[in-house]
Amino acid sequence: MQKTYYDPADLKKFSKISDWNEELGNKFFDYYAKVFEEGALTEREKSLIALAVAHTIQCPYCIDAYTGDGLQRGITKEEMMEALHVAGAIRGGASLVHGVQMMNKVNKLDM
Amino acid sequence: MVTKSLHKRESDLANSKRQLEILSNGIFRSGDLPKFSDKIAETNQFPLKAKKLEILQINVGYMCNQVCEHCHVDAGPDRKEIMTKETMIQCLEVIKKTGAHTLDLTGGAPEMNPNFRWFVDEASKVGIKDFIVRSNLTIIKANKKFADLPEFFKSHNVHVVSSMPHWTKGKTDKQRGSGVFDQSIQALKELNAIGYGMPDSNLRLDLVYNPSGAFLPGNQIALEKDFKKALLEDFNIHFHDLFAITNLPISRFLDYLIASDNYEDYMYALVEAYNPMAVQNVMCTNTISVSWDGYLYDCDFNQMLELPVNSKVKHISDYNEDLLFNRDIVISQHCYGCTAGAGSSCQGNII
Image 1 (cartoon, rainbow over the protein chains, first blue to last red):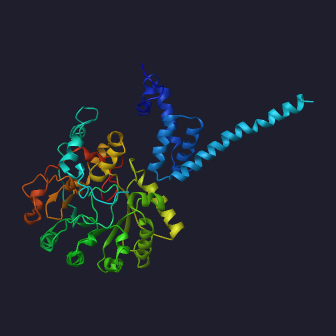
Image 2 (cartoon, rainbow over the protein chains, first blue to last red; image 1 turned 90 degrees about the vertical axis):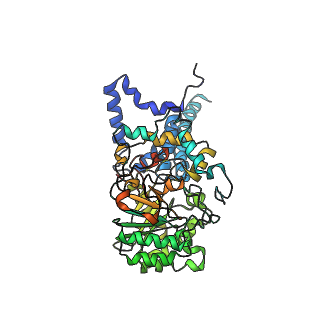
């Protein structure tokens, strides 16, 4: 039995998801490739966004992929960590902003 | 940070035979990854054949003022292999009659060869189209006797190609040693001041980028854009082209890969990025590499692995371009480094 849910080697097999549904798989990978092409944002900026999102959704495959991608693009560790703090700030902020709801509720119920 | 060559440290990996064993065993012997010969055979490109010679690359010695972690030459101040004037004279005879359009001097730090200036002086008289010296930049600042190198290069119309692993101090010094970044910036400013690397200038100044770790270089055009923007904004420095070069798994980079437990992943990455289109233009097919002692190799990497050309002609003293033409190129698994992605050569991407 496999001892962990995640295997780093599975990342290399990502494209195999098309084996069980070629049409949707191909559409997804075409879309994916197009998204990361240079447009109004540079490929470098998109890579940093991807890295931050990867940490927000806590996807080990994506963290692995976009840390490596960032290094290849010459993105520094300082830039990577700043991007993560943006993700962290939004995540933390998303929890804390609900504090207003908590405060509203307390204010309504408390005498 | 390493301070001595593998040779000085008497490391197991200073032995080229040991490196070749590693590159042929393990994941390649077990069949987990295909051997390079089998991979290129898939597209009928085996054996790889030499085409018309375009680049004559001469390594004038392994001595260097730096000890870079990734160096495939295992160069450093402790290396004593230096090309003699006698071998240089033999090289000059070849330079006079070669059909190659490019002469490429490398090392080590080629400037540390005591006969370097004499050799450049003589070679430049031949009138070869593109005369490259691979200068590590810090040599210009290493000692007063090298301070006039920019002017010397200019007076001989030398095309300067210099290493610069990153546009930030941290990443540069980590790979190449403390203080390398500041000295390189100063040297680049001096080269710019006399016209090297300036827009529309005929004095060519190109930079070489090697990844500072166990990863492949990204898109050369995008990296060049980032380098240009950062060096201009931060230091008002100009240069012409950026060559993104993949680190090949030999010598000190192989030592690093094994010590950091990255060897297998790196080889997987190289094989995964294998591009059959790049095979058509690999530099060994249009280059001859001459070692400090005058022996001939398909490339600088084969020189370091002591894999001589597969030809009756073995030495610069009996050089014959006709006999070297169409020879079988000597290959091993390190060759995957030149066929990954957009390919890699001493002139950067090849497709």
